[in-house]
Image 1 (tube, one colour):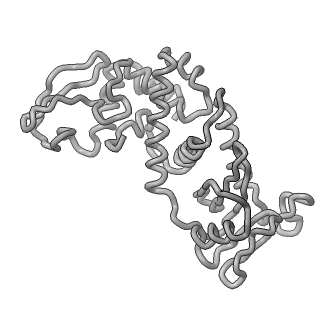
Image 2: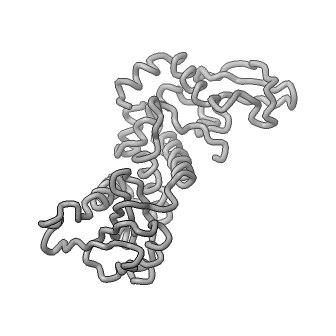
Image 3: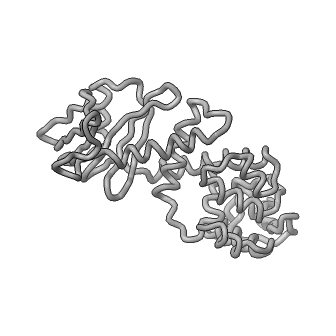
Length: 274
């Protein structure tokens, strides 16, 4: 969604609140504590969202309870802008300037969104890849990461690996690739898929990036994914700790492949697990 389309949806606080409520309660309206549907309207928050009181357990909650906006008093329009811009490569400082919010508020909201997107990616990520599968490995923050991407669908898997040995590569192939698939790799000798179950083609990057005789033999798709990941990580001013790198990668893969909502202005703000 473009920022202009988002601006039309949330050009007033009332419109922004209604849009958020439709996203928040699309799974059904109920008490967040006891799941009872017997609920009264209680009062309104300063940001325009509604508070409720459950007739069954007397619990008071609001539209933003159990969302990434919990205990957040900022303007709902500004928070929608943060959610939208968090999927770009803008820094926290740049997003804070555009949304006119405190830098710490933006940082905390982005961290919550990132954890939710990682959770959603892992819940619906592919278990195995098939067809033509490109594989490669790269170094990020002095650590090796292995990646595989299914050509055509662009479904991808990226994981931290201890080394680039043949044992590690063989385990990844048998774990994540369907039998009788076609595997494209570079000239790393550790890739030795069993010829009975996999068809394997090698790209000699010291000579060419696309095979001169067969144009479908290349690893440009996975190389492009590494470029996107490194641009996202390099754009973070203070760098990323090793334990958080996988979170950023999973968020990027989720936004790349799994966000199918036509109007994702508040998606995925609702997630009871966080």
